[in-house]
Length: 261
Ligand code: LIP
Image (cartoon, rainbow, N blue to C red):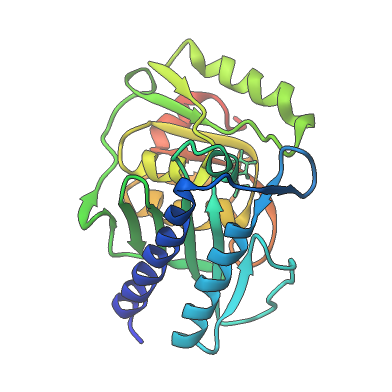
């Protein structure tokens, strides 16, 4: 199957995930907790993930899966790995904030080859194929050449890792006086897509799981940006890891002063 067919299948599946998310619109959503009272999971996370894995397994029986609500098993040297966050922005979802998405990356030989992120509330499907550009609802994305002071900065508050709070708010204070304003949206995958779409000039978070960033990282890169760890090192995509993440145009990453000199 060529990457265009792969991407078309991923788009179909992620739209199906979005329809399940919208079914919860009229419901009082029951959330269970995982590692802390902030780390939530709902029956919808599991339903969306089971749907995505079922549909992708049907088209790609040889594929392996790394997914948020699945036991974190290293897929070893599996040639095709789908990295799935069924509902990124789970806390937003539980509280009907209407700012959540499904994020799916297809990782081949350790790097994302194709990516989809779908926000069903806004009906916005961000996608990318390695080497063939990034798109929002079929419109090509290219990050505008703006300086830090001409942009909004997005950040994540690492709510599952409160030991990072001092560092996180120290970092956002460092850039707050040098950008137009700051935002904390609650969905890292959408934050990365917003950087790719030029809605923000920079995103960072002190720790994310691979399913939070795998798809958004390719979308940023294909829109002309960079997405690396906050140590300035390449991210890992093919196994269940946690990494810091920073994304934007190379010049803005440099300007931010958040990367090691
Ligand atoms: C969330 C991210 C968010 C981060 C949270 C969590 P989830 O993903 O999108 O940016 O701050 O710690 O990782 O848990 O909603 O899929």
